[in-house]
Image (cartoon, rainbow, N blue to C red; front, side, top):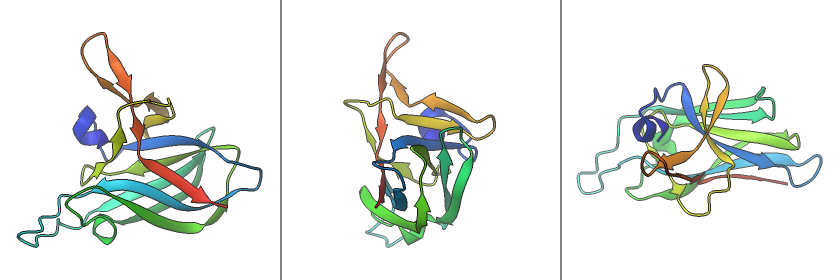
Length: 153
Protein backbone atom coordinates (compact mmCIF):
# COMPACT_ATOMS: atom_id res chain seq x y z
CA UNK A 1 0.00 0.00 0.00
CA UNK A 2 1.14 3.56 -0.61
CA UNK A 3 0.79 4.31 3.08
CA UNK A 4 2.64 1.27 4.38
CA UNK A 5 5.34 0.96 1.71
CA UNK A 6 6.22 4.64 1.40
CA UNK A 7 5.12 5.99 4.80
CA UNK A 8 2.61 8.35 3.15
CA UNK A 9 -0.76 9.53 4.44
CA UNK A 10 -2.77 6.95 2.56
CA UNK A 11 -5.96 9.02 2.64
CA UNK A 12 -4.42 11.40 0.07
CA UNK A 13 -2.14 9.01 -1.86
CA UNK A 14 -3.20 6.25 -4.23
CA UNK A 15 -1.70 3.64 -6.51
CA UNK A 16 -2.08 4.90 -10.08
CA UNK A 17 -1.65 3.20 -13.45
CA UNK A 18 -1.51 5.02 -16.78
CA UNK A 19 -3.43 3.39 -19.63
CA UNK A 20 -3.86 4.03 -23.35
CA UNK A 21 -7.29 3.30 -24.80
CA UNK A 22 -6.98 0.62 -27.52
CA UNK A 23 -9.16 2.61 -29.95
CA UNK A 24 -11.17 5.84 -30.13
CA UNK A 25 -14.54 5.54 -28.36
CA UNK A 26 -13.33 2.68 -26.14
CA UNK A 27 -15.44 2.38 -22.97
CA UNK A 28 -14.07 1.42 -19.57
CA UNK A 29 -16.50 -0.94 -17.79
CA UNK A 30 -14.43 -2.62 -15.14
CA UNK A 31 -11.36 -2.14 -13.01
CA UNK A 32 -9.49 -5.21 -11.78
CA UNK A 33 -7.29 -5.00 -8.70
CA UNK A 34 -5.04 -7.66 -7.18
CA UNK A 35 -5.47 -7.18 -3.47
CA UNK A 36 -6.12 -8.67 -0.05
CA UNK A 37 -7.06 -7.38 3.38
CA UNK A 38 -5.69 -9.71 6.04
CA UNK A 39 -8.78 -11.89 6.49
CA UNK A 40 -8.10 -14.43 9.26
CA UNK A 41 -9.68 -17.65 8.03
CA UNK A 42 -8.92 -19.68 11.17
CA UNK A 43 -10.71 -17.26 13.51
CA UNK A 44 -13.22 -16.19 10.83
CA UNK A 45 -12.35 -12.60 11.76
CA UNK A 46 -13.19 -10.22 8.97
CA UNK A 47 -11.29 -6.91 9.11
CA UNK A 48 -13.23 -3.87 10.24
CA UNK A 49 -15.09 -2.44 7.27
CA UNK A 50 -13.30 0.49 5.71
CA UNK A 51 -13.68 2.18 2.37
CA UNK A 52 -11.35 2.28 -0.60
CA UNK A 53 -11.66 4.88 -3.33
CA UNK A 54 -11.24 4.51 -7.11
CA UNK A 55 -10.76 7.47 -9.42
CA UNK A 56 -10.51 7.66 -13.21
CA UNK A 57 -8.62 10.72 -14.46
CA UNK A 58 -7.65 11.97 -17.91
CA UNK A 59 -4.11 12.78 -19.05
CA UNK A 60 -4.31 16.26 -17.46
CA UNK A 61 -5.54 14.57 -14.24
CA UNK A 62 -9.07 15.95 -14.51
CA UNK A 63 -11.51 13.75 -12.61
CA UNK A 64 -13.74 11.63 -14.89
CA UNK A 65 -15.26 9.21 -12.35
CA UNK A 66 -15.07 8.40 -8.63
CA UNK A 67 -16.31 5.39 -6.65
CA UNK A 68 -16.03 4.59 -2.93
CA UNK A 69 -16.90 1.13 -1.59
CA UNK A 70 -16.04 -1.16 1.30
CA UNK A 71 -13.04 -3.45 0.90
CA UNK A 72 -14.93 -6.29 2.61
CA UNK A 73 -17.29 -6.49 -0.39
CA UNK A 74 -14.35 -7.48 -2.61
CA UNK A 75 -11.26 -8.47 -0.65
CA UNK A 76 -11.92 -11.00 2.13
CA UNK A 77 -9.29 -13.55 1.20
CA UNK A 78 -6.09 -14.27 3.11
CA UNK A 79 -4.17 -14.38 -0.18
CA UNK A 80 -4.11 -11.95 -3.12
CA UNK A 81 -7.10 -12.20 -5.47
CA UNK A 82 -7.85 -10.33 -8.68
CA UNK A 83 -11.24 -8.71 -8.11
CA UNK A 84 -13.38 -6.93 -10.66
CA UNK A 85 -15.00 -3.63 -9.73
CA UNK A 86 -17.79 -2.79 -12.16
CA UNK A 87 -18.41 0.81 -13.17
CA UNK A 88 -20.93 2.38 -15.56
CA UNK A 89 -19.57 2.28 -19.15
CA UNK A 90 -17.40 5.36 -19.53
CA UNK A 91 -15.90 6.55 -22.84
CA UNK A 92 -12.19 7.05 -22.28
CA UNK A 93 -9.83 9.59 -23.76
CA UNK A 94 -6.70 8.26 -25.45
CA UNK A 95 -4.69 8.38 -22.20
CA UNK A 96 -6.22 7.91 -18.76
CA UNK A 97 -5.29 6.90 -15.22
CA UNK A 98 -6.92 4.47 -12.81
CA UNK A 99 -6.12 5.43 -9.21
CA UNK A 100 -6.84 3.11 -6.28
CA UNK A 101 -6.68 4.61 -2.79
CA UNK A 102 -6.23 1.61 -0.48
CA UNK A 103 -6.20 3.85 2.63
CA UNK A 104 -3.74 1.38 4.26
CA UNK A 105 -6.58 -1.05 4.93
CA UNK A 106 -5.35 -3.57 2.39
CA UNK A 107 -2.44 -4.51 0.16
CA UNK A 108 -2.28 -4.05 -3.61
CA UNK A 109 -0.36 -6.54 -5.73
CA UNK A 110 2.87 -5.34 -7.29
CA UNK A 111 5.11 -6.78 -9.99
CA UNK A 112 8.75 -6.04 -9.22
CA UNK A 113 10.28 -7.17 -12.52
CA UNK A 114 9.93 -5.53 -15.92
CA UNK A 115 8.65 -2.20 -14.61
CA UNK A 116 6.81 -0.44 -17.45
CA UNK A 117 7.08 3.09 -16.08
CA UNK A 118 3.26 3.34 -16.16
CA UNK A 119 2.74 2.91 -12.40
CA UNK A 120 2.75 5.83 -10.00
CA UNK A 121 1.83 7.00 -6.54
CA UNK A 122 -0.68 9.82 -6.99
CA UNK A 123 -0.57 12.71 -4.54
CA UNK A 124 -4.10 14.11 -4.56
CA UNK A 125 -3.03 17.13 -2.49
CA UNK A 126 -0.94 18.64 -5.29
CA UNK A 127 -1.83 16.49 -8.33
CA UNK A 128 1.65 14.99 -8.58
CA UNK A 129 2.32 11.60 -10.17
CA UNK A 130 5.35 10.07 -8.43
CA UNK A 131 6.97 7.12 -10.27
CA UNK A 132 6.36 3.86 -8.37
CA UNK A 133 9.80 2.63 -7.39
CA UNK A 134 11.17 0.52 -4.57
CA UNK A 135 14.51 1.80 -3.32
CA UNK A 136 17.14 -0.89 -3.00
CA UNK A 137 19.76 1.41 -1.52
CA UNK A 138 20.79 5.07 -1.79
CA UNK A 139 21.66 4.88 -5.48
CA UNK A 140 19.49 2.05 -6.83
CA UNK A 141 15.75 1.80 -7.33
CA UNK A 142 13.56 -0.54 -9.32
CA UNK A 143 10.37 0.45 -11.13
CA UNK A 144 7.32 -1.57 -10.17
CA UNK A 145 3.95 -2.26 -11.76
CA UNK A 146 0.79 -2.08 -9.65
CA UNK A 147 -1.47 -4.98 -10.59
CA UNK A 148 -4.43 -2.85 -11.57
CA UNK A 149 -6.15 -3.53 -14.90
CA UNK A 150 -8.69 -1.70 -17.06
CA UNK A 151 -11.33 -3.72 -18.93
CA UNK A 152 -13.91 -2.56 -21.43
CA UNK A 153 -14.89 -2.57 -25.07
